[in-house]
Image (cartoon, rainbow over all chains, first blue to last red; front, top):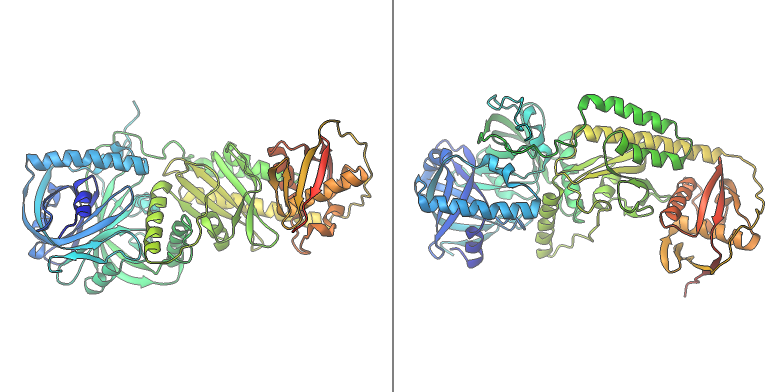
Length: 156
Length: 466
């Protein structure tokens, strides 16, 4: 499901944004704080999230979730759509991934935009959860006329 | 150690849309999540979010078609916005109300998008399709970490209560200028000295209404007199063509966004046009352009820049617009006075004070008025033709004293009969000669009169077209 470029993107300090719907259909936007690709071929990805978003993510109908990953240096972006198959407290590996993610993200943001780490750390969560995602589809989300074009799906 | 950025602010108070005004400056991309009727979510970034009123915001819609389809099925959205000065983040819960394709809100968003497009020469390609209007039903601050550094842009802002008196002072200074040369200098220097805009450029519209040329600047290593911007191209040209201000913050990020969109269009085989380099600061991170208008006509434009990503706000836009209007009206008054000037001045030859020494070669290309001094480009167009005319008179008749009135009648200048802008071009030439430390200068000797100061022997060469 995920090609090497997409795995590389998810493995570094990319900007991560999350969308889910509630049981009533109301959308909810949130941020992600690091990913671990367990299996590119099977599209299994672990996502570190704000613990405050845990209930929202757990309540998503059929676990449906969208995650857009953006390389902040050039804004190349992909949107993963799939299902949350499990969610729970962040473990040591998740927290370690968060720390390396934040370091990489801080360097990329500072080098490309000049934004100091201390500024965007204002919205870094206090506590974390982590969810397992089964990716079904991948879309190009790079800003421009091709944004939203399907790149890969589990069936094709 | 500096005071916390949150000092004096009740961070626990519920935020209103008005409290979030800076979030809508577009300096940090917003995030929007929507969901289809079956619960399938979509999440992406937004180019622009604008506040419509105390309860509503407008989102730019260029190409987020999946978002549009979701809204048709499920008219709700969740948006994350960030204050670019403090990086406070807010989550807005929205209910979609309507889509506008004209009107005040649409035009304002269109100006934003056009300015973004102009950064990479995508005018006419990267366009606003619609402005989607949403009612904000909830505002939530996402994380409450205390600030550890000063907000960005905190050091530049002038106390709002001082703006009007300062503006009045600059207005007085402009009003006291006796001529165009003093006016352009006073305006650009005054923007720095009185209003705190350290880097400013004043451009005037050319005779054909096709290009803007720099007549004066302040705060740059090179004054850049004579540099040009095509009307309708780039941020300056687009703002001037629309006769509407343009304000862009976090320019590095916006330029990156614009470059990405441009690449995306190129991948699709669409040629977005040539790249227009912005004149001025190499590290500018905020810019503000105000058109200078008088009697309903575009006269020029004022540009200010700053390295800080959050340097300019709505009050800066208002202030610069007022200054631009003052300058435009003064320029037009000067032009009207010049047209009515009936100073009789049969010029006389002055004493030839040209010093001895090696001659400096002045090459002139009649085709476009380009003029080179010892191989270095000096000026072109009307200003180049004026210089050539003066130098010919000096070489043939030994003249150094001139009047505007007689020079403007020279048919070789190819001036249009209406709005010839002669005085502006003469000032441009004067300033360009000074800037380049040229061996010939122009000195004003009275109203409508000037003297040619030839400091080295000159060898004139007109290059005929082949």
